[in-house]
Length: 224
Image 1 (tube, rainbow, N blue to C red):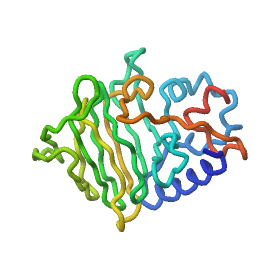
Image 2 (cartoon, rainbow, N blue to C red; image 1 turned 60 degrees about the vertical axis):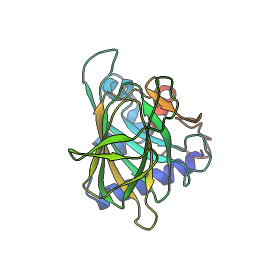
Image 3 (cartoon, rainbow, N blue to C red; image 1 turned 90 degrees about the vertical axis):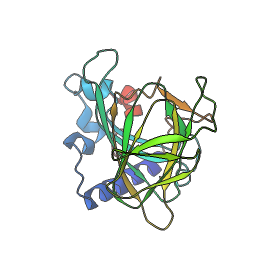
Image 4 (cartoon, one colour; image 1 turned 90 degrees about the horizontal axis):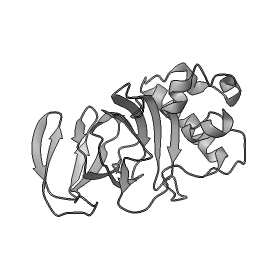
């Protein structure tokens, strides 16, 4: 992805968050210059990958396959401190987050506002293959049985609990607009706990055609 594209996505995302009165921490708006000399006091942010995470999953087509994420809080499995994570995300109409599951993490995915969120679910085998088993899903504490790959629609205010080994892909429903998505989960570990059905690039390579407006989590190592 080009840095200019990332900057534009972040600007638009901030506008969308503010439209729905979702406020980010102050450091979300820091420039790279603001981060200078902050490595020690901001160690938790840097070590636990809090902050902006813009990805096209290696597709080179963010509008088709991509996601805006901002990790607000997260623990660290090595330090064994916080045991939880919270994210806010944005998915546009038919903008896909590819099929994946987590080996260990349980999470609630929440439609916080905007359009409708579509999910498709499958149960995985122990080595990550798809099965044709039906699934018992928990939507806001109510259990229902769905077929593998069946479209589930989460309207604003609804949430679903995703268990380990439960494949899921999601995207905004066409004709309903962007979706503001919350995630509340166990500790998030993108390096070791994601299993995508097809090979994807979780963190995109950035072509530096302009200066960063705000740092991504993948920028911390190079800039700080």
